[in-house]
Amino acid sequence: MGAENMKVKLPHLIRAIRRVGQIVTWVSDPMHGNTIKAPLKAFFDVHEQEGSHLGGVHLEMTRQNVTECIGGSRIVAFDGLGSCYHSRCDPRLNVSQS
Image 1 (spheres, helix red, strand yellow):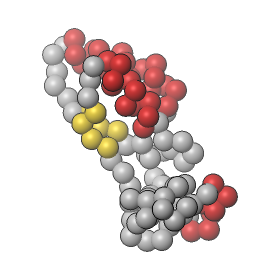
Image 2 (tube, rainbow, N blue to C red):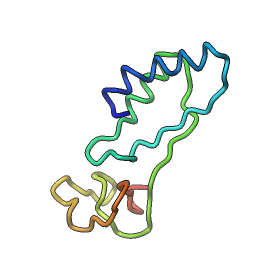
Image 3 (cartoon, helix red, strand yellow):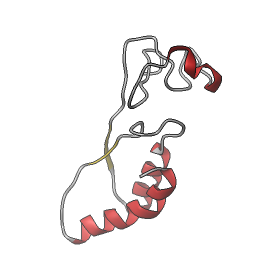
Image 4 (cartoon, one colour):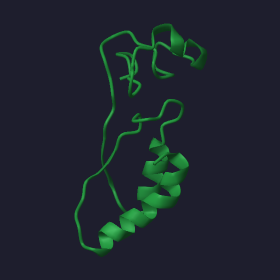
């Protein structure tokens, strides 16, 4: 959905689910298809505004010393991503990041 689409589309989805009386577990996969910015804050913000609750977060992680996400206790900066980037799909957190 992406961060900007989430702010627009997710409230309508939450309301529609509520209207039909369904009980769902809302889970975010913020790394799926997001190579620059994960929309996790937008996901939390929308659920708070709608009086709904986040039920889980799915994160990709590995024990390998990858540099596929920025941040962490062993700081990986944007310009260092290419030094050990192996993922062919979703970026993964390394041990110090997870």
